Length: 421
Ligand code: ATP
Ligand code: MG
Image (cartoon, rainbow, N blue to C red; front, side):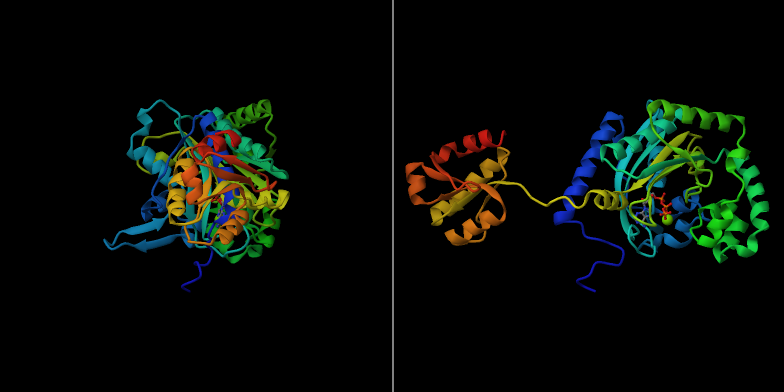
């Protein structure tokens, strides 16, 4: 217990870290180009927020939330997704007073009590974008194009964008009725959970992953046939913009997404490279959410992308990248004066942008050189009494074995020149 992380959680470090940093930095620069600003909301929120926004007929609320009472006896929940918290922040800080749309992104640890398997953890990470303040399909296209650009830039293959429209409340009511009639005729063949879903929220049945239910759902009526004129027009314009942008998609009327708050556009990016948990990114428009949470009626679109699934996909396609931390120079030492001086020289080199290391263990000279080799230092020196007295040190190129005499005081200049700093 003491030496094992809780089930469904993972330590990310060492050889696993570079890909996270690479992807996160791509996400940040992409958002900069799109004018999307970062937001960091609390890891926990009032439970009520998720009941209201995510919806109490969803799997998340019914089965997956980490909910507890704090010492003040408030019901608190670790965020199972971030849209609710970002929407809460949008209202709380009166962001609707700013020039609209408001465009935000986050990279956030997220918590769901789930059965763990590849691509399904209890603590995982989502990169997400949320945009508020417009009902135009152009905003849907902007959000989708941000996700598509990221996926393109990362060079992910075998991934498909699927889009659908759930319409507005009126279309939804019409469809719910049609769907209920259809499911009613097949109710005996559905799984136990779907029988309940049928009563409370028939749309959820379309999201079921049981093979038996999936088979029946295939023949279900299409929500697209229930769209009113405006919703239809919204969907058509979105498709025209995506076509013009050169973003490929398929229309899939079965996509409903696992959350209650979606209206009109919903979409997913699905890959065939990582087995059953193939949905890397899911999102949609949620025009009712801000009002539901106590704000003014506000058009909004967003998505959440699972970082772990994205990384699994990348590594399934390209293999794992070689892990090679960079070290420019090792400042070894002999004797006490050299030892003390090497610490200060290392610091000034680091301040100048050179990745420098020195002995902080008290190793012999031989052991220091072995260490310098092990960490892949490109250069090394050994600083002793003579070197300090004569301001001269032998700079060794660790790859070629060549040495060069230089002034100790010139070490920084030399390294800056070699490493272009
Ligand atoms: P699924 O159908 O796979 O359970 P979901 O519909 O619950 O997914 P969303 O709530 O839309 O997923 O979350 C967006 C993305 O977050 C998913 O597409 C996925 O990449 C990722 N994700 C969701 N749950 C997990 C989890 N338990 N572990 C890792 N990633 C997850
Ligand atoms: Mg889920």
